[in-house]
Image 1 (spheres, rainbow, N blue to C red):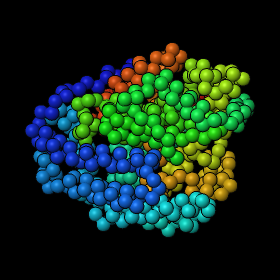
Image 2 (cartoon, protein in one colour):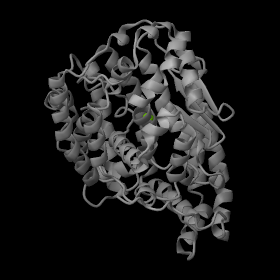
Image 3 (tube, helix red, strand yellow):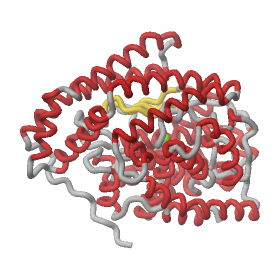
Length: 503
Ligand code: MG
């Protein structure tokens, strides 16, 4: 296969006077989003619990302010005018494309629908916590029913060609359709099921003794820091903190990115891999080109592309044989009990495979079946083919069909993720898309293992920066992928990777 030439920038300068004026307006939006991001980071890390009282109101006010500036007649008119201009550069066209998408949402979805959606999802998030704690789906159900109804209204307002679900997918991954997703899953499902049968016959480890070895928090913390340093941690631009749910967030693209890690006193791989995952996300935000700073295209492109970067670092680098070998001295230095284990143990510990009810604790092989399950159910909900009340039963049925296991209760079944309660319908497929894109990048590069083996991460990250990061959102995701790699969504690379690795 021949690799496509790198995308080439026409010009870094903004030539259009209209676009220049748009960017002047946009600067206030950028600043408010900067403030929102910092507030969000603070909320999840250091804010005292009761601080939520003021924070929730401050966030809602700022969000409204952003909406008002966005819908300012002058800005809307400038965007309309820019659309008519000829000879725009790629960056200028990107700026107009991104702003038009945001405007379309606010212009087509009535304000009272947006307001109700925000209110219902805030209440549903609280209900979700109670429902999960007590494993009682009926606590969440009425909220979820309203969320599905409103999502259907939003889909109708936004418009779609084939399926209302397409309108929702497009919110998270520009241009992604149900057709794309169907194609990916119809390729993956039989392969993964076959692979699971084969791994069982082979006796591939389903668990590992290292999962139960207790570890002091300070030791895992040292391991995480040393590992990230090995990957090139740019301390002047990236902070690492602690939070109950690991995440990454950009405050200022390129210059101020934060990630968080969660520590447990056992099974150190969980902390290590979540740190690698967030580090991959952070690399993307850090790699945005200087010229895009504070513009609408100066952020990572889409959820699928973002996730491809985190998955690349977590799985294609972190769970490789080469990485197990490279990290051995660091493991022995930070965790004294590791002197009893060999490289081979570490590789299998990092790569246990077993059908498990919880998505976030699932391995590379089974993970995408969890996403498939959610995709099926949510696309049927949006189409009105099933009712919210049927979810628990359908969830368990699909889990059994796909993975051969049944959750013991709804807490480890239909209630395990917060996404739907947060109103995120159409979001899950971007996880699998991320895995598929990461696999494609792995094979297009072709020498990932070699670079990992020699610890040459700078060269590997430079490749990602050149092909993906630096372009921000100048191009729609499919276009960027086609320009950088010669094709966009193709699940065959992920199939090849899984087949080659889990033999
Ligand atoms: Mg992620």
